[in-house]
Image (cartoon, rainbow, N blue to C red):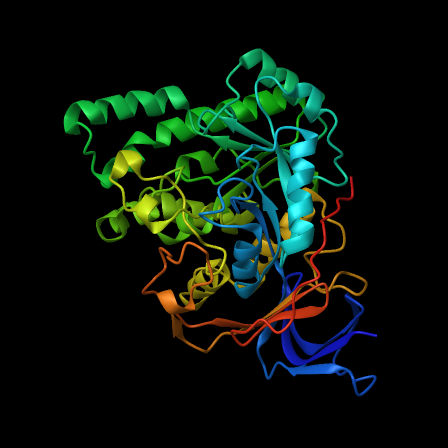
Length: 446
């Protein structure tokens, strides 16, 4: 019997913080109580000593670059960084090479993850203008959902045919996750910038090119179509305060048909940071103003925004160091997402209970993930232990990402993750990886 006992923890779970112990047996949470004694001499006992125990975070949007882009990252390298950051489950996007737009290509990614992933995993199926037949074959119990690029994408994943789009929304019973930026607006803004600056556009113009208007137009259209067809829509990475008013907090999450996500970088950075961070904080959608950042946090706290994610999307530093037009969008974030949120907690901007709600409980509810996201008896033992008073700084030497850089370099965080358990296995302990994870494919109660 594989057994782990965590003692003297402040357990953050379901809106409360209580002092107690948690017993893990054979990958599951077996007991939660004020005081638990080890059942046998083989039990691994972790004295939390007043640290905070949380359910493992669930990241509903990552790009781990495998297959086809493994010079940037792999499922193995980035999932290892994720567990070091307290993320025990992830949902990865379909825009790899080749893109996961057929059942065979999707299952190939699952096969890779089964062999190499440190964290529990699922993958989005990618929609295109011409693969509806394949979309309708996807099993909603074993696949996280359908990803649609509604306005801006790479390759052939832009779904811009109105008839096809309505047909997908009408016929699929999958949860539809959407990237919403209007391509016509972006191209118009980009052409204006080229007229003014030629090929040497300053990075500070990124949020003007990928503007509030571009985001709002696309998000509005997606929501209108979801309401018309009855589709289940989840809008990824909101970046503007204006968009938050498209969403409601009048129903509990489990009853919502239209939901939204915000990413760490849109809660952390603003357009003032382009001066020092440059293309390292070039994301799509763009990091925008302080007003937008504050509005996103407000909507997160009042439940118009439902979940937090990373949109982890690494590139090599040589790629990122290109001038604006040639620098790809995206950056690594899974290792530092939770500690960044804890920094916001230290600043009085968000509670520990709300962090756990938005980064663990709600992704499990939203995607209907089975037996994860909560500290409950009978649930999978995906757990993270956090010391709130152990400062450290982000340096190149302590990065785990394959790309070996981070937009967080130079940041000092007050909190650190001391332990991460995946399916009851201690995979991360005090900056070391003592055991390889027995990660599992996520399943869904649909």
